[in-house]
Amino acid sequence: MNNQQQQSTSHACGEQVASKPATPHQQIKLALDVHAATIVVARMVDGAKPQPPQTMKPAAFLAWVQQQKAQAQEVVSCYEAGPTGFWLHRRLTALGVRNYVVCPTCLDERRHGVANDRTDALELATRLDRYLAGNDKALAVVRVPTEAEEQTRARQRQRKQLRQQRLSLAAQGRSLMLLHGRRESNHWWKAARWASLEQELEGWLVERLQVFRPLILALDQAVRQVSQPIEAAAPAVRPKGMGRLTHETVQTEVADWNRFQNRRQVGSYAGLTGGVSASGQSSADLSITKAGNRRLRTDLVELSWRLLLYQPDYYLVKKWAPILLNPQAHARARKRAIVAFARQLFVDLWRWKTGRRSPEQLGWVMTTD
Image (cartoon, rainbow, N blue to C red):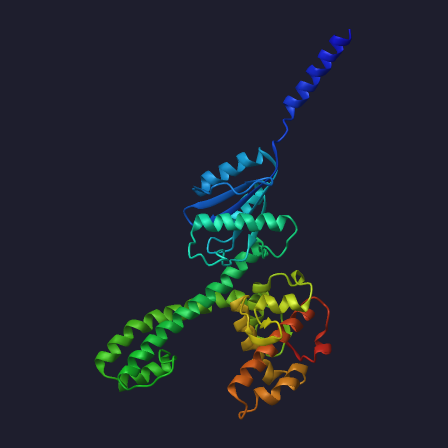
């Protein structure tokens, strides 16, 4: 009787085990070196050392990841942010993988002079293992924007790309004229100035410039078309001196102002914090790190110069105007001052956007266009 009960019990347990097979591993870690055509992946199973990297096509890799999901309770992956964007992060997340997009860095710490996709994947796997063990300095995780944020940002960045192409062609025409003794600004292609140049320049030079001008005009029209919806999205109430385009550039690059917990994180995101070189008793202040959003940093500096003229009651203007508006001040001192102005301005924008300060507290005059 007891044997029959044991057999029936073991049979029932066997059915339960068969219906819910246990995964052989607790955690599988995947470090990815992502390219347009291939993905190099180094795998770590639980606490073991990284396995030899494998190279796969994207479609084959995603199918392989599904197999890894069946072999472990959790699959964690990471890859460096780059030109391939965030589509892979979204696909991995949809498969149930905990993925991290990290800031690109030099993975050849010891300067061996040997760096390729395989060595990068292996080093990234080691850092991912340390990060998951609690060392949050091992990886610098990047915030992944939502698809809506990315689409809005793409329009703003496309506008800047078009402007750069327009400026490049205008500079080529300007350089051509300078080679032959004619000094002009980058606005030589505009209708009023071009009408005069057609009469004053030699025929062959006009013919060469006419190659550039239609391209510049087409780009100028494209810039205007892209700018219209961007300007329409900006709020009517803004600090005086902060145009609609500038507001939207800053807004789309930041995306979520609540992502920052303190003012140090704000300054670091724009790359406007000063570097330090210290060892023992010696210490030296260096230039800004520039380890942040380059597009945002440029717009903040430009905005700072405008606020000098439009916000006389702003405490930063009162603090830095004696240097920035002093024609006798050294260029190096003015450069340091405008960077300090831009860094604190970004912090104030964060305080304003998150409700920590009101425009009145900051001394801003608001516009309601």
